[in-house]
Image (cartoon, rainbow, N blue to C red):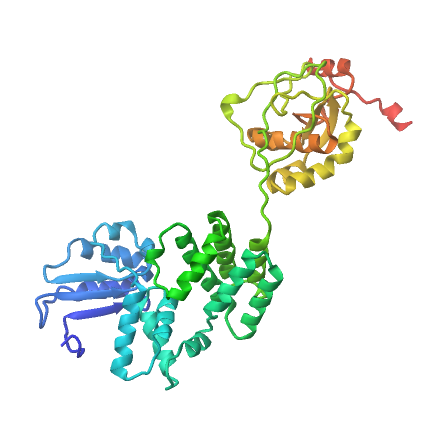
Length: 456
């Protein structure tokens, strides 16, 4: 009776079309009626995550205390959108994706029952393209059989817009040989033959995944032909795990970018360029630290290099203050400000220093656009901030301060410390090269401009 569509006690509701609270209220009013034919009355709500919040609230009481003769089956593909109050009142039964061999077996049964001539390799390709979804696989088979011809591997590749495995294998060989020109030629020829760029990227990721599995010693789980297995072994022996992972990330990104890019092959071209790039390991650099109290007799130290991986251990930081202004000084630990550094030297490289920092930290570079180079005293650069909030923001990130010190030191070839101050009417010229003026200001004095002298 169910298969013939005449069983009255199974009610299927499409939540995508009946999302309002009125639809749920109507269901709630009818649920009290006893079943007409069966022992239970079953409500199947498909795509239940499409219900509105009000509809879920109206359904909640019924789910919590349903009539003895009623049962609800809530189906969804996005369980994360179901309210927790509803989930807590349900039993969860997750349907897993089908393995390739089961999909191929079911497709073979359909072909034999419908008398479709087929090649096993074509059904295997359909099963892989369905990514474990039986309904998608059957839909693809329906599309292939509509021509009335034999379902061959070549026809399947053409209709589904899938590149041949040989194209993917040749592409990986070109990358291993670090031959980007050959890799680009393979991509262009494949796309010109009608293959979808996003699909080609997905195929490459899938093939790289199989190489990774072989490289990690778990090749028994792969369902491939013997020829493909031999090729996987050969390529896996020439690749490191790190290189394979980098390629998977690049081509996976290409599959995502092809949805929004104006040029369909651009993502694949970038992936080939990145994969063929020679990766050279750089020697580890010592981390940037804050210095101890600077001394006037300290000899200049070679400027540190800037590294985006510099991290700070809060327990190892030391307090350091300028002797006259008591401002906190930041510099690499173990180094001292070079007293020969002048303000003019720093002004000349200030824009270059911000550009260098921008390569690794855009936020810090933007913050430094609001900063003014006030003065340099005994190798310490005093930066003026227009507002206390900006100063506190930068001061809270000690790494940002040390980055600033390291970038300037790198460009000058001299070690430079960094200190912060607020730039206002009183402190616009707070830091001077004259120690006597600085001491007077620190004790509460103010700089007074003679208007008559200024007019002259």
